[in-house]
Image 1 (tube, helix red, strand yellow):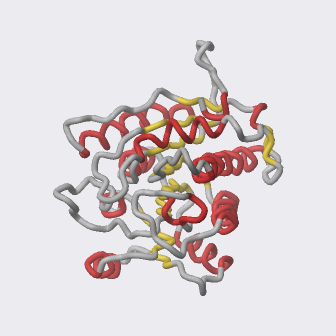
Image 2 (cartoon, rainbow, N blue to C red; image 1 turned 135 degrees about the vertical axis):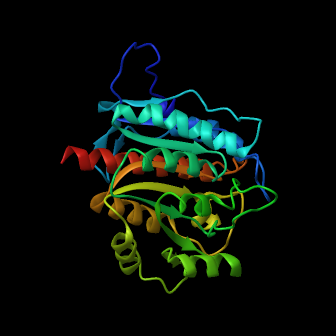
Length: 285
């Protein structure tokens, strides 16, 4: 249970946040093992303090509910994403923040589609070192390299943090007008966030591939790219987006747990903690 909070003994609870583990990595193309990350991240979360001094939230005062994992649908990735969508659709009636822990980044399609069907004035913020706009990759349209491409078919989309992109993806984004914000050492962080905010609608689904961060922060991920965001960069970005938009749901993906270097696992766990803390703090004001 995330943060060690176990409410399984209660017949009825009203959660403030729901965490959904999704140990799925069937379409990965480089480093494997992200299916093990939900369990590792949840285990690491037990070491987090109940009180977050930056948001002023004492998580002990709130209900953080962790569901049973969504196991892989072995019929294929399209069926898996449909399964995720169905589960998230059922949870949205809880009227709380819902977070998905992958697993690979393709899980974002199922999560984002469920929210897009339940919220007006909606968009997806896709934080990733890669554009993920390939129409098909390694024989499937539903894999980790096509997540943003599938999402743009049913939702407004902003992709930010890109450090690697194919020419075909770049041309597709320019043709369709998908906003893309690249990341390099010359980025002015305040301007970067202002540009994101200017392109987002009121209700936002946040899709966070951990490779948007520099590998020094997260350790091993599915497709690592050098030159990424620092911890302070991502915390600032998440805080500003939470302040000025309504984050209705999120996913975090692509961590490859390394038992010999647990700092990346802990960082991933704390990012979820920060997203939840920002959401709770906003509702409390």
